[in-house]
Image 1 (tube, rainbow, N blue to C red):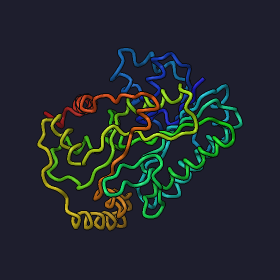
Image 2 (image 1 turned 30 degrees about the vertical axis):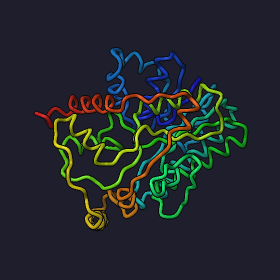
Image 3 (image 1 turned 180 degrees about the vertical axis):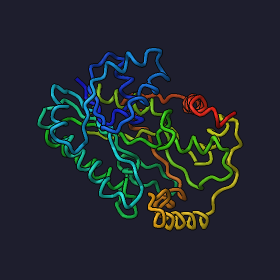
Image 4 (image 1 turned 90 degrees about the horizontal axis):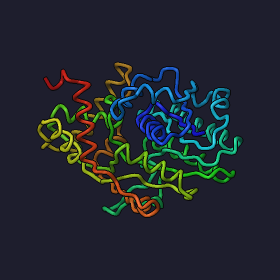
Length: 339
């Protein structure tokens, strides 16, 4: 039986759907506050019988630091896809990031070892890949330097160290390091923010760029790696290295909106993160833009996907098709924005 953590997130939901279509028996971990109706809604994007598929999932309510519930979830499990994570770039959330991403992964690793799981797949991030310098593509071997990284990247790096410990203790592992993941259903978080921006026809765009990949490609890579003989390796999952202007333009065009034409100047970004800092202090709200976040928006990063392409003979899907599909799902769910 397969166990999926983070079964109600973007990757987890699409992974479960993929595994259900291959008739895999699976169990999925969810938190008490998880939105199961959104899972059904995302299933309905791809299937005419979402409720029937949903009923095939054996759900276990548990937190990553709830050991008794996790122990129950691991009974009879042979493969684990660890997708659960907290995503935040707010320095004030570092302790919670450590608790969920690092300590939570420690628990998943310990239970994988004690239950003699046959293989573990961990969904990490390109945030744990070293920086590309002078336009040279970063690879899985590029040195990662912990100075001046955001709190999310640090927590994921620490989580990866726990996964490597699993390999040392006899559990075969694979780590996937996706870029910005594009896909439908999560309009208020992750890449959903890019789609919301594109729907408004933004005038401005950040000067930098990074790696992007579709959620279906991330899922396909994960499943192929788990079904393969590849073990104890990590893989960059990036289809295209794009400027932020390019990705926002692609999205805006699908919404019938104008593409952004004006780049945000460095001094403007410096002012914006300071305003955000002051507002967070006055309002008590979380940070949306940090100093380190501005640093990432200013630079352009390039990632080499050749390792996963060669290992799996992998062909990436057409990203434009995914953007078209995601934009149409957004329009269906938010018709008031396009009337």
